[in-house]
Image (cartoon, rainbow, N blue to C red):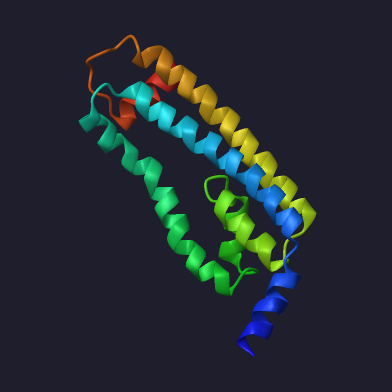
Amino acid sequence: TYNCVQVAIYNFINWSVLVVLFVVYFIGGYLLYGSLFAIVGAASDSEADTQQLLIPVLLPLMFVYFLSFSIIGNADGAAAIWGSQIPFSSPIIMLQRVATGTVGIWEVVISLVLLAGTFVLTTYLAGKVYRVGILLYGKKASWREIIKWIKH
């Protein structure tokens, strides 16, 4: 009976859509988190400073990882719906929802637009931080200092 359930689940998933969305969300998530890491890299000049600045960037990834366990059992819950639209969690959560077949095309489109818009914004902010941070070599940066650099 266990093999019959596996075969039924395997036939239920639309693999072509899932693979295409995996590639799209992988690239989008990679670019988004890459731009966040670029902000950290532009703001620090030593490894010790980088370690401290990485914690706020890594926390959303860890939160989404643990949230994904609860979403597996309830793909239509509020946490799953909101998690699939928030750009920092959508590359992971949306794919779980797509695999269950409970997602509308409009939800995927909104999620991808938000992901792309957030990537463009974080890349712009990374450029601003790099512009100021490169001139202040040797100065220890904090998140408060980085926010000041973005405002310039």
